[in-house]
Amino acid sequence: MEEKKKKMSFNIIKNDPLDGHKGFGKGVLSLDNVSPVIIDIEAGEAEIDIGAMHARSAVEKGIKFLPNQDEVPNGKPYWLVWVTIDRNEEGPYYAGVTACYMTVDREIRRGYKSLPEHVNRMDKSLKRHIIVDHMDEKSKRVLGEFLRNHNEELWNNSSDELKKSLLDV
Image 1 (cartoon, one colour):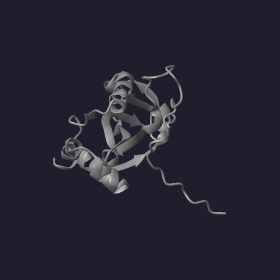
Image 2 (image 1 turned 45 degrees about the vertical axis):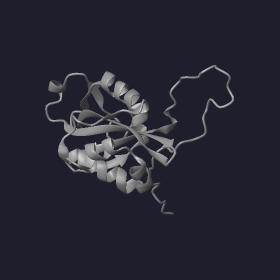
Image 3 (image 1 turned 90 degrees about the vertical axis):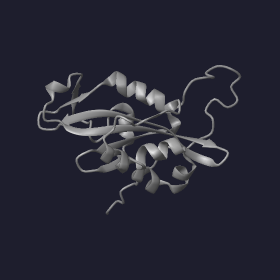
Image 4 (image 1 turned 135 degrees about the horizontal axis):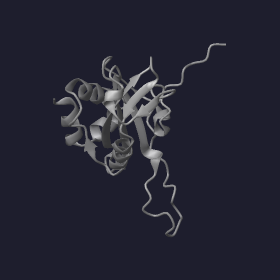
């Protein structure tokens, strides 16, 4: 039998996991509303890969990551973008969007990424920051179009800062 490939989508806002608790765990950030988007810079393509939450995306599998970019001179460039969804009075929207750079050389099974940067950018996304200024213009457009096409309502409810950062480049 031929199986249909499951379409990946963003983690959508769920009920508050701390609902009903009087104080324990309050102030803890939940990863329920964050999703990783991988952008293949050369191909100009973006896709959601939930495996990236634990460094197990299709791009990252089987790769040993090194902290020095010079050790991976022929690495293919990617952006890992942390996208957080929240809800306001208008409805759900893209609240936090932060990008991290990485490279992967499949031939030597090595890659470059700064693990502290990836962790810090996920944290910034969860805290509703928009950090995409360091991305190349083509990748910003790819991400903006991907987010808009993925869910027009989320895009329309998002901040002007996000829209200008990604499509008005």
